[in-house]
Image (cartoon, rainbow, N blue to C red; front, side):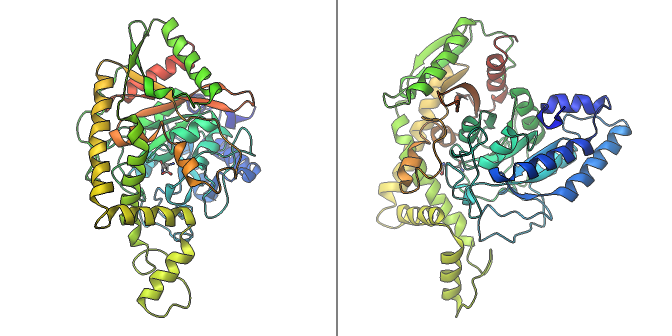
Length: 475
Ligand code: GLN
């Protein structure tokens, strides 16, 4: 039996019964990662450290300890700090950066006894939708390697889809968990903004960034989310209130699922539309009511996102100057030269594009026309979602307007890649939780993702609705 193909839940059960050890599962996972190296899912594998952690987990289990993640091999996106393990953000600038501390979520995973097997590849500084902008090598799709993995957390999605980890962590600023989850046919959850600490997540756009889990089943996704959520005094935006406002749904009868008319635009790919509509028909058949609603400000969201996220990125990334942070270029004459050469050499072109865009929208004369207007649009988008969600348990739409496309096909057209974020970015702007679960395939066998969007801190509502779908109504 190939133990890497077990679900996380089944692995823990087998470890509890003493049928499999964490060392065995970790070794098998590391071997699989070596075998699937060509997919480019990992930047760094933590072989030795992982085996040590696995042995410690086995020992603890032998002494009677139990836990939902004890001894489970898990991958972590390479923009989440890991003490003593290189954390690159898939950027040349941080190529040699070894953090002196663990991110809050990594501390949480470690204290739950999880085994960190490696750091996953991504778009440089999490800017992108294909994981083609890694400064090292692209991530390839787990279902069809000639296609993009999705991004920016492409490595985290592919690691899970190709059995190189039982679950993983990614980060989502405008879709970077949900879209690669959809493209590889796995489950990805972007939690409510502030539900999971950003302490130790290398910032892209701080008002939008959120860490969340990938897994092969909804149940496994819940297990990892439960382990990483929670208040952290080290993140000033971390929520100290009740994180469990959701409901464990046990019957779909009478449940209300909202579909905004903006969610199915005429230009939407027909196969994606058909797959999501079929999933909606399932909910209806099981007794849920499909409620037509509207998010009037939906068409503002994409522009609003690319203004706000780039503005924040230009500020966050100004620290990489070759002096205080990041590598320094060789042969510099004076401070200006250090800035100029280091940034020229070590930032990739997409990151430079965002920094320029961000500086532009924040510059005097343009601030009011762009940044300020986008901030106002943000308030409208938030309000529209609140209204739409007030009468529903969740909203449902496609996760992405297409399935995974061929690698290299958006290379000359960044705007085309931005358009692919149309269904995911509004959720980050509104700070809401959302989950992507596979709901079908196109004629080439590429997975289609359905996105469920919920009210703040109602992750459980989304998880149980998705679980009902995954299990075909048997809840
Ligand atoms: N694709 C979006 C972007 O390029 C989202 C990225 C993300 O969520 N980190 O900004």
